[in-house]
Image 1 (cartoon, rainbow, N blue to C red):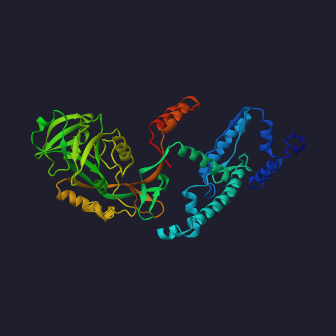
Image 2 (cartoon, rainbow, N blue to C red):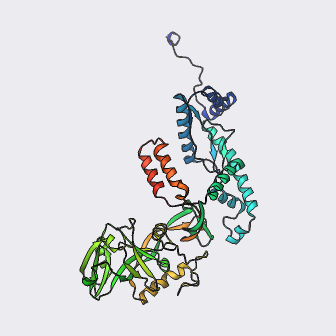
Length: 467
């Protein structure tokens, strides 16, 4: 017997298969025809305003998993705020400036593999025009891709960083900084590609493994901490630094020690060396056979402030400075400081009033004034500097080291860290830093709360803004 007719089975007009590739676009078209987003805005017009400030994606290609996840999460937040009774406005935007777009245009023009001279020969105005066209094309493409994800927003009126009105606001605000004397030109170390002859942002640097020679170098001490001279007698005393970039030694202007770490003065083979207490054992292993030694004294790093050394081969005084960034996991606990060739070196040098000295030109060659090595590339000079240290009796040891080193994303060659002229905004001019800190403390509700302290400390201690 067939009992089917006696059963009260559920009935539905919904199709048995979702067929989403077909139905989703139809649903999105229906929502757009109904102006769902506009009607939500109209219904919420008198509610408390809630705005999500969208950090925009680059208009340099199709969306990917990262951009999709970013936009979907923001869409969830905006829609939930609207459902909770807020007037949740979402205005999408695009970043149309920067090297990602320029790099894609270079690929289209075949310039990504061309020589520096060929790339630089292109008319800048024409390059800008092509970049604007490229960005506009991918704004349209990405807009449709985001809409396909079901993201609601004012897609007909986005903001873009290349809109003339937007650029005009930036120009006016920058003009206000200039008018107040807050903009200045100075030297700052940046990643530099000697092949492409251009500075690189951190995002444009790739790190590759390579083996280079690290060196332990003796700096003769000229002046001693008070009360230490009688313990040493007439025997020579040296501060020993370790570096993985011997080519930066001609630019050395200081030595850094950690103020709260202990340092020992170790006697080996008639000489005295200043080495961090935690690094003494490894330092002694550099001598063959492992050296017998005696500890003449130990003292905190802070006691070494004011000691003056002499450069290993240049007639130059080298002061000892205090720095919290000095690490104890490698080297000797004494760091060679070249303000023209390192970020931390630069900041420490500025605080100490040292000049930002960079003896390397755009081609990666030492300027003629650099004795012994003028005209050489830094890579040509590296082994010769080590040989020169050995001849001068300043080389304790040279040790091969496998480590990561920055390379140019475009040409894949190693980069240099060298000081070049940059434009800055002075954060302590006209109370700019204090205004920002006051806003962080009093004008912003931080969720989670620990974010406040993190941003506050970042702004409080950050150097002047590099433009």
